[in-house]
Length: 216
Image 1 (cartoon, rainbow, N blue to C red):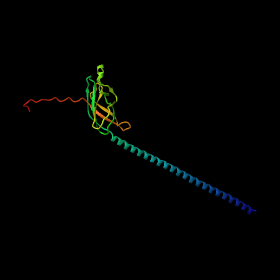
Image 2 (cartoon, rainbow, N blue to C red):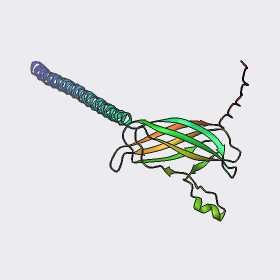
Image 3 (cartoon, rainbow, N blue to C red):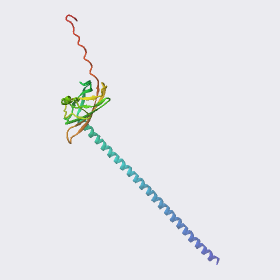
Image 4 (spheres, one colour):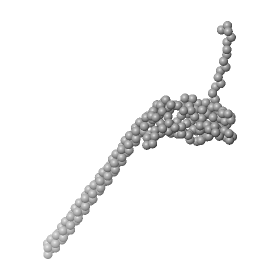
């Protein structure tokens, strides 16, 4: 009787122990699988981040190369454009005692230009004078017109142009900045140029001293 009871209890304990072992084993396997899945997820996330970084780096490199190409093209365009230089600048007063600056510049090199539009800025600068129209003189008006922009027409290498800049009445010396928009024609390149003129009254000519015969 006791032997049978002991055997029965032993069998039940063995079954319970086996079940516990199986449960622990299943839990361990599940934990191991979860850890593997987590590691795989981390690896996939790291791979995605790395791929995104590589894509961003490739995009940045492409944009840099594009900017370099555009910069080189712009540099070639600028180098192929007209080269201008200032040749003279002075201030004076006209017959009505109005102050103005006479500025001369020339095209040193570059392609022929079909149009040169310019405007002037600086302390005491009122604008640009158009070509004189003496037909308005009889009406009591000035024989010039002051405008803010002026198209002086075509230019080519070796050519020069003189323009007049209207100044305030009290301005006799100033720095004038000329802004020039040069176009080679419709659907052709265009260039922006600038010239700075230090305009002041022309110096008075030195008096001529004549020597008497027999001196010196």
